[in-house]
Length: 264
Image (cartoon, rainbow, N blue to C red; front, side):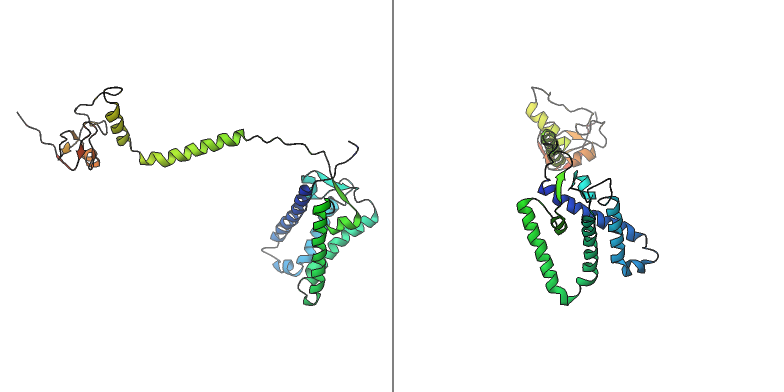
């Protein structure tokens, strides 16, 4: 394509934000070098070090002959068109760093220059409104130099498919539902329900044997109900059945007592 497409507003805003995030991260890494020694240099020459890092980054990106884009623009595949080729453009670009250095070091905390700060921020605000309307010149530097941002490659259309997301959503919903319900359902209650409602059709009616109907092990210390039910179980199993129904005859067990066997 001979004709380049102007970059959309969203990539330009994202690229500008990425540049600021990169400078913040770069400064954080650089300042960590002096955390345990010569920490006073960071406090005394903070703005000078930040200016140096910005110049160093620009020297290898926007001011380089191999690139015509900042860090954020390279990540989003956009660039300036035309690139910074003339001496006037490069001087104006470097002057933005000088202005930022002077503004942050001397003007921010100087109360007599509050009207100047208000006018400067007012210009930034109106420039951003024009950017939102026209889609070009996100900052004052681009407007002064008449640099427009274009796509390095034509943007491709993305087809969004939510099939995988829907499948994951259904799976997680089922998983959370089962995780919430299962703890309230004991195996004993489930077996009792099955034996009660499916007796004679799928499951046969249980009879009293020497195997406990609760733990499916040989009965130890047999205990029985003090109510109408006369079936007996292990002591621990019978104790767990108090105020519940017998898994064999489905009668309520109010309390338990040791099983008495008749001899003879």
